[in-house]
Image (tube, rainbow, N blue to C red; front, top):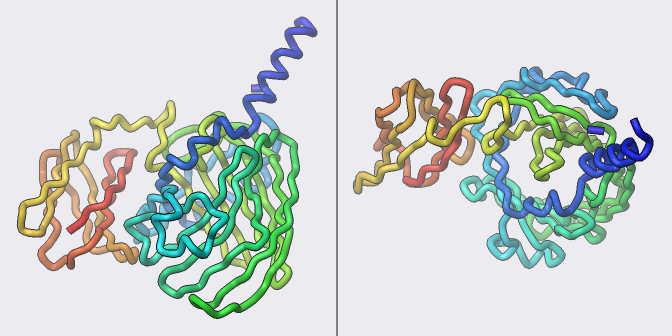
Amino acid sequence: MKKQLFGGFILLAVAAQSQTLTYANFSGIPNQTITCNLAQNSSFNTALLTTTGNGVTWNASGLLQAPSTPSINLGYHPVSSTPYASLFPMADMSRYDPALASVMNYEYYQFNTDSMTYVGEYEPSSGQHEIFQNPEKFLVFPFSYGQTFTDNYAKTNYSNATTISSYQTGIRTLNYNGYGTLILPQGSFPNTALITSSRTNSLGPTAYDYWWYDVSSGMMLMNYHTNAGTTTIGYFNGNLTTSVHNTPEQDMQVKVINNGQGNPSLQLCGNGNYTLTVWNVSGEELAGVNLKAGEEYILPESFEPGVYIVKLIHDKYSRTIHVVK
């Protein structure tokens, strides 16, 4: 991105601007929904973590989705839409999957022109939660290649809805140390920034995060997290388009039909063959079938009323939807 002297200055200025994370480019974050597929740890090439510099390539095309795990559709929602809004008065938005709200954490954020700040989270199934008295910034604007940012934080941890388990302080250090092209299973993203983070904790080990962002849109493309020997890899692909593997909407159209008897059916309207997998909101795989375009799949009578996660795979592409019975 980045023979005359004056022309060289112009090119350098344009390159620097295109590599910079800005509020203008990331301002669409509150309207984004990220389809997150958890990856098999063994399919991740750890050499990507040390691939830094300007104009580099991260080849993560070999990532495989962890077996028996549904895609998670993380969207940003008003804080008032959550049952724990009163605990996080500093937050102006919350991130969660409505279909998995009973089993996944609600995350709370404050989004400003200079930063995206994390202020806490709540786990509905256990009541465990954390509230930041001094929130931590995990994204700042503008943020340019080669820049470092350090931020202190302080928080209170709760072991259930009311019991304080600890007070913790620490330092998060952000580094913008890579810019180039990220290759995911569904295609290539040439305008990608790598932001790395180390997060110290007064009571525990240091946690490390690696975030790959599409600079032009603010969309998170891939994340690698490790803390005390536990590693999580997520790659985000359900609602991304690239110049390599673009899935035309008409190729994977699905109609959800309510037959009036409580057993909705899915009608595949595209072309070719599909693999259809159904999970419940707890992540338990309930069914898997192969279908042709034009065929229908009816949710079985044995399925209890509730929300089900349905993933369709067609050729190289996948699509995840939620079906309510």
